[in-house]
Amino acid sequence: MPRVPSNAPCAGSVTIGKAVGVATLIAAIPFAAHAQTRITPEAFLAAVQGKTVTFHDYPSGILVGTEEFLSRKLSVWRMEGRGCVYGQITTPNGQICFLYDDDPDDVPVCWWTFEHEGRLMVRLANFERREIQEVSSITEDGLNCPSTPIN
Image (tube, rainbow, N blue to C red; front, side):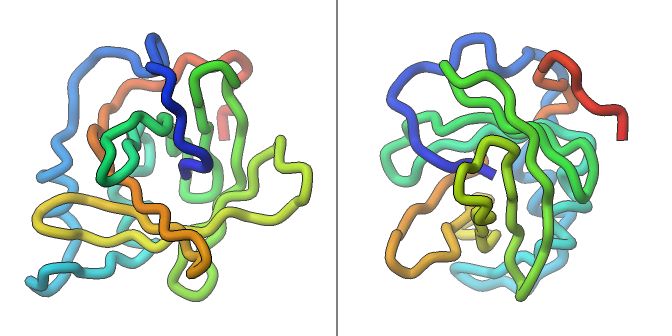
């Protein structure tokens, strides 16, 4: 999942192709109708597995990056100027956590996933930082990263 917002445009990081609508994803995830509804990590991963998700900062709309969910346990994160980095996915305590290969401190970044007013969002699972990002697109296209693992 996204780590640090970037002001730079992320040209070329998302392959244009057949998009899977965010509304379709939200409709596929079972939840009660509330202004803000938590989505379990398992439901989120089931919906995005094999897809590529683009994240923008909320409310600024600044592109953060794009993540390809290769499986429920492995992802590829791409941010402009940094190339691709692989992440191991875990789901402790109702959170979705990512430990990226380039993390120097070996501490996973964890998020809560939720739906708010028909929009799919993620919130950093850290009360000291109030970072929220919106899923702006979901496609079936890959990131075209070199050496993408098969499994």
